[in-house]
Image (tube, rainbow, N blue to C red):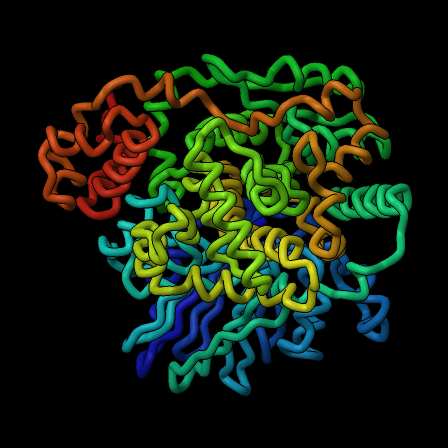
Length: 621
């Protein structure tokens, strides 16, 4: 919806000129209006992408002489909130911004658990000199901040903050191909964590962060143990999905649908098609193997809507890569970020401001193959054609028989090598080692934050008698944060770079609650994950679309990375890692994932460390 920026100076009047410049740097997120406010040492800036109430009445900062709000996102249940808590106050706009403002003015941070939506906002009260920053439960909308001796600064985008790269934290990506939550490669950079809020005293510069509603709080034994048949659960999930899609279609600006051809986006599209016609579907195609255009076209034909597409070439992929790295603020983890941005350009050119996507379904309904691998490793002990694997599994059966208490470490040890590369929390390895190097490296590299998050997730299900069930659901809960955050970061950056808002109907509060309290056998069966979700999808889509093998929204980057690129010779990675070309080639050992990772780090380093403009970077592959 927008971009927000703010700064609180310590013992200094607000520098409005600097604040204005940094707010205007977010114009790609909100080109419709740029608004600013200052009070003593406090500055608030807002770049607006008008979606609800397109008139000037919805401009921000929003408020009166006592308090101001700058808000990025959407509150989908704002009508219900107004009816229940604010009906005695007249509205002067048709905007969720006004309702959020009035609610904050009435209840302060206590109102946060009432909100159902995606949001990141800052709310300032002049009389108390207090600033509240808050973020939605799953972290759909970004909000980073930098506390320091001279003040406190926050923004929707990292590049807009005054900070320096932290190359030690860069090792996180070097090892695992992703960053841990709140552990990004910049000095003193913090995140307002999902489901949390920060309170800042603008006089003393003292701040604190605390959760108001994390996903773990939605886990409930009574809901899990509800006596419902499979048909009842299918009906309930269907109803929740219909409700969520309707909520996410609230807009006074044109909306569209991302249609990859996969189950998740296709289901969102098909549910919306039952509600209305005249839909705009968008598909990001590419050159090479693994294309899903055929399935996207079939879905479009099934729902009776035109499909608009773009086609990404290998040349364009590397041509756009430096610019997209700049937009991401981080090394690009997902190669398909480039194709997503390309289709967003088409979306914006068509006048569409909102795009609904299928992100979150795999995390909620165990759709990734590694979820099934993990669950199966706890329940069957078949050999994978490997005698050592069979012995290891038998040993672990005995260990669990001797010690029936749930032991997450040994569960992870029981997983085959193909899964271990996904276990980014640092578990895995051979059962003969009590502390595999991968485990130790993972825990240390994230300053133990991953271990704390893992413990919190598994503790949420410690009331379960079935250790296997508790372990799988705890693993899911952990990945809902750890695996999903980079995907949501990608969606936000790649769409907002072209002034398009991405919405994710699967990540609605009640849908999340439903999924987290669903037994594993309602998510995983012999055909893999998303069992219950597929039963709902069969009501809307052809069977071969629903049950075909998952591919994911991707590009064939293994065909795009065919050789060691010259850009790595004497560049950022070589200087940082103190490795020669020969050593870097040896480190990759022919693994294109490793090579791609080096290229991603190289381009990021040149832009954010060496301060090279992205347009001056050429990747010749």
